Amino acid sequence: MPSIDFLKPSPALAYIIGVVAEDGWAIIKRTNIQYIHYDVGASVKDKEFIDEFASCLGKVLNRWPPRPIPLKNGKFVVRIGSKILCDLLKKPINIDKISRFVEHCEDCIRSFLKGFFDSEGHVQKGKGNIYCYNTDIKLLKYVQKLLHQLGIKTSGPYLVKRKGTIYFNKKKRGELIKQIKIATSSTLNHQVD
Image (cartoon, rainbow, N blue to C red; front, side, top):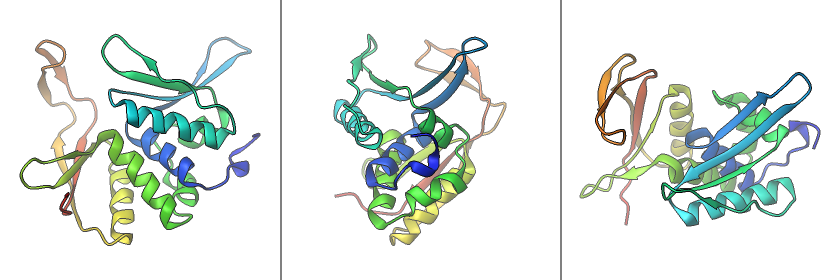
């Protein structure tokens, strides 16, 4: 596919957009003067989630789905080279570019939200509230707008960590880290069964 104009809106593409918008990546690297590398992917611990992401990549690009590769840290990674997906999904996500694929139909909206919340959403134990965190406030407000279209009430976004905040990182054995971006959260006031 030579350009984004040849992509067809579909639930599979909307799911990919949701995953990459939250937890995945779309990177364009120039390795030398003549060669440019396009890389789209995600790395997660949930095998079902990464299998679905790989399946959607295969459907959208009309090819065999890439195989998830297990990593030593217990995660699985799926990556694929695609100029067209990199052009659409490079960060920060351009909401004007993705909206025609996400808002194509209600199934596409649901698939985008599924990919977004599969990536970074979590449920608060006891209360059933669903939270997601992202440093892109425009993206959180866009997600909030889509949820409202589906009749789901939300609150936020709320500031979680300010830029420049120093915090204790448990994953890196207590290393102190300075927050580079603003982290915000949005809450869905929607009971989870």
